[in-house]
Image 1 (cartoon, rainbow, N blue to C red):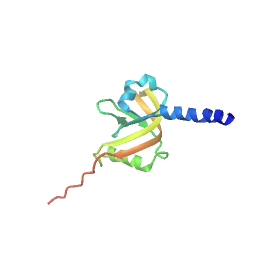
Image 2 (image 1 turned 180 degrees about the horizontal axis):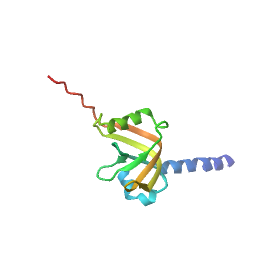
Image 3 (image 1 turned 30 degrees about the vertical axis):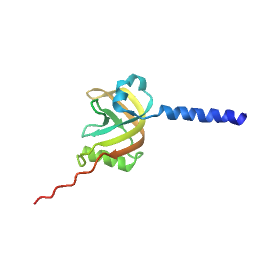
Image 4 (image 1 turned 90 degrees about the horizontal axis):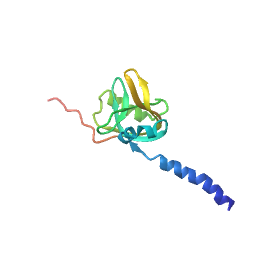
Length: 136
């Protein structure tokens, strides 16, 4: 009986944490921003990267800035982001990240939403890469 009690104490919280960490899309996160503010979330969306920002966005919703330590994320993930930033690859780059969400962070031109990435769960380019056309 004592073993069962310990099992319940250990396993049940682990199951509860796993259920809380289901991936949500970035648009749902923004719609319910107050609910998630200051909490760890797992978010999926598409990378937007240019000279001024690196973010994750969904279809028809604003971008959420992502910040991450280049040394602690997979090399292929940072390569994918740089390919988007430099316009080397035009395919959509879908990512799922885990991190702390902050709904209102001071930025140079106002306030932004940000995810401080702790873990990159998944990343992939969607579709086939277009081959370079040869000149005749």
